[in-house]
Amino acid sequence: MEKSLTQIALFAALIAILGLIPKIDLISGVPITAQSLGVMLCGTVLGAKRGALSVLLFLALVAAGLPLLSGGRGGLGVFASPSVGYLIGFPIAAFIAGWVVQTWRAGVGLAAFAGAAIGGVVVLNIIGVLGMSVMLGKTLPEAALLAAPFLVGDSIKAVLAGLITQSIAKMRPDALLSRG
Amino acid sequence: MLTLTYPSKTWAHGLPAGGKLAALALATIALFALREPAHLALAALGAAGLVASGGGEFARASLRPLWMLWPFVAIVAAWHLWLRDPAGIAIILRMITAVALANFITMTTRLTDMIAVIEWLLRPFARVIPAARIALAIALTIRFIPVMLLRAGDLALAWRARSPASPRWRILPALTLSTLDDATRVAEALRARGGVD
Image (cartoon, one colour):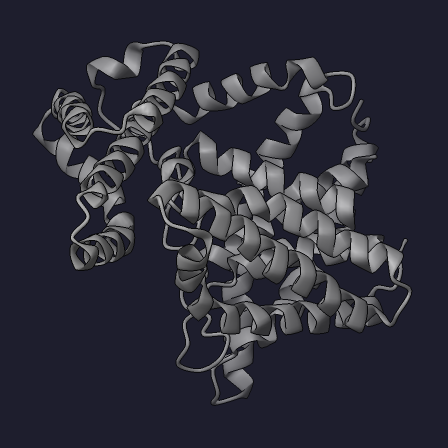
């Protein structure tokens, strides 16, 4: 009981840290924020339910007025902005990422990559594009064009989520709740 | 840690948080129901008046978070200018007004009051997740953000002491692992002090 509570709380903090760390250029020269990587890791490490709760806790703190989104954004304004779809998609992405790792009995690294790619790239971008389409009054293909440049970075993050989850599975086999 | 609440008091700081949030919800719904650029321009003027009522310094601070919208404004403006479609004006006005109103509420409401509203909203789910547990989780997250930020800095320094290359993603496995280990230790500490109900 205590452990799942502390894991949910501390992984919410991890999402915040990954958005706040000044410029960990994940790949040299391309400054992509690691925040959605944190969302993927919540799912692939903590599993579907705890991962989604952790992301919801993070979003509650953002809504309450803490500047925890990448670039120091936060408050209620971000939920009224065109990128609101991505915020709504975050907990869903974590849930799907965790669910894939829990159900697909492939190697941890591969399952985590697949979960992060399906939840954190495909589903997250679909919801994000829906949000932009509604908020900007654009058709879905037009909104999808706006999201397209970020897909490369997102795919890199899915690979990293797979690698990081795999290394955790090696170092702390008991700690990986998504495979508990 | 810094919050986005404006530090000195304006008239809106004294209003109850729940009322302000309900008003914001209604205003945002109304904003999305408006179609005419003239109506939306009036709404934008109203929002500007609201922001200005907090004083000059407050108004300047309110403009800063609006900067995050510039890529969207630029894209919509370019798109609709190209199509010669005036609907773009309505979209841009609505977007800026909605974000400005939401920021106004964030800037005039203390974090503790916001969290109290969140806990109130979650009361119907008290059987599933007791309020005390939510409060503890919120406190733990807020407390651990600076701790883990320091940890990330230490890991990056440790990397730099051994390699001329920048650490990039390589500190992330260690950071994630230390988060898991911290969670285990904090859970043990909680249990040793009587646990969570």
